[in-house]
Amino acid sequence: MVDSLIEYGIISELHSEITGSGRPAVPLTPSLHTYASIGLSLSKSNLEACVIDISGNILSRYYEQINDTNPTIILKKIKNIIYSTKQKLQKANLPTVSISIAISGLMNTTEQHKISSPNLKWNHVDLSDFYNKNDKDNNLEFIPISFIDLAAAGAYAEIYLRNKKGNTIPNFLYIHSGNSIDTALIKNNTFEQGCNNWGGKFGHVFVSSGKSNCSCGHTGCLESFAGSRALIREGKLGENASINNFYAALFRNEPAATRAANIAAEKLGIAISSFINIFDMPVFIFDGIYSEIFDSVKDKIIETIKERAICSNWSSIEIMKSIVPGNASALGAAWKGMNEFLNTPELWIKKSKEALSYYPIQSMSSDI
Image (spheres, rainbow, N blue to C red):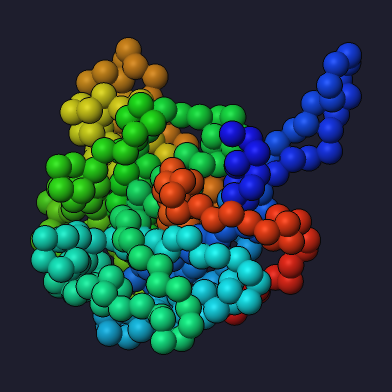
C-alpha cells in the first residue's frame, strides 16, 4: 500500500532514522507539489483565491477588493482567475485536481445550479456555465467546479489546521462575520447544514425590533445590528468608510464605535443563546470581523449568554477566535476539494520519477 501511495504521489519517504536495533524507520510525509487544488471565496467586498498542494502548503494567493457585485462582472473575473491559475499550474507540471468556490447564498441545484444571495444582491443567478463549459480549446484539461457555503469553507480550514496542530474540537458552531453573518455547524466532526444545505444563515435570525433594513429586506435581523454595514453606520463613520476604519475607531475608543460594538456583541449573545437553548452547543468559533475585534466584544457576548442560555449555570460554554490566518474561506474551499480528491483513488495519477523528485518551484505570486 505504501509503495502505491508513493507511486501515485500521495506520500513521500523521508530519510531513514536509526532508532535502535532492527531495520531503520522510514518516516512518511504528504508529498509536495504533486497535485494542486484551487479555492476561491467571494464576499460583497472582496474576491480571494489560493492554491494548495497535498501537504496543505499554500503555493499562491490572490486578493482583490470589489465595489460592484454585478454577477456578470464577478463571474467573468472568477473565470479569468481560474483560467490564469490553471495555466500557471500546468506550466509548473502540477495537475489541478479540484476547483471550489465559496459564496454566501442559497444554492438551488434542482434548477441548473442557480444561486440567490441577498448580500450580493443576486437573485437566481445561473451558475450552470461553470459546469457545462471547459477549457479544451485552450489545451487545458476540464476540471469540474463545485460551490460551497462561505462559512462551511471557513470551517473546513479551521478543522484542517486544528487537526494538524493536534487541537481538534469535535463539536462547534463556526461563525463567519463580514457583510453577512453565516455559520457552519459541526457535530461529532461532521457538517450539518440542514435538509437542503440551506442552513447557517445566522445573520437572518431575528434578535430585536429595529428600524434598519437587513440585506434580505426585513428588519430586526442579527445582520442589521452586527454586520459590517451596521457597525460602520452606528460608528458614525460615513457611507464610504470601510470596516478597517471601524477597527481603527474602536481601537481609539471612539464613543460611537464602542457603542456599536457593544450593541453588536449583545445581539450576537442573544442569537448564540437561542442556538444553545435549541442545540446544546458548547463551543463557538469566530472568524472575520469578530475575530479581529474579539477582545472588545467577548465579555459582552459571554455576559449575554449567561443571562439568556438556560444551561449556562451547568454547562461550560466557550467562545474563541479562529486559528486560521488570512482568508479562511479560500483556504477551506481549496482543502475541501483536495480532501475529496484524496478520497477518490480512481482520480490519482501515476507519477514519473522526475515528478516525484521534490525541487523548489518559483512562486506563482499573487498575480494569478
